[in-house]
Image (cartoon, rainbow, N blue to C red; front, side, top):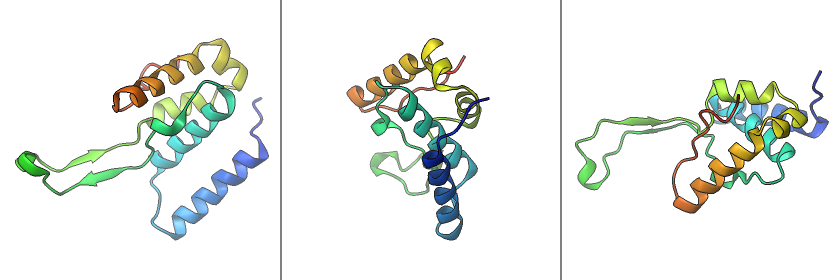
Length: 123
């Protein structure tokens, strides 16, 4: 059975408690944050700076794109991928190449200014 570090556990509890009392975090945001924390803890080459775990709805038209419908921006790591990642231990993340794929995706997003693609990162 995988053990969760006490600091990660308390950080998650604090995040959920604060979110519930403040702006109210969505479930997909919380599980994304948990996956990022796990990858950061287990994967030495993973740079979480490019990962966005917030949900955003854009209702405002932008410049010449004013004809576009409002759109939702979902967290970069979806719930299915997060669940898969969180079910694995650090050793499995490294051994199965998940750390390498996640690091490559994050590094590519940092280099290009794009959105990291985490689909397929988890086996």
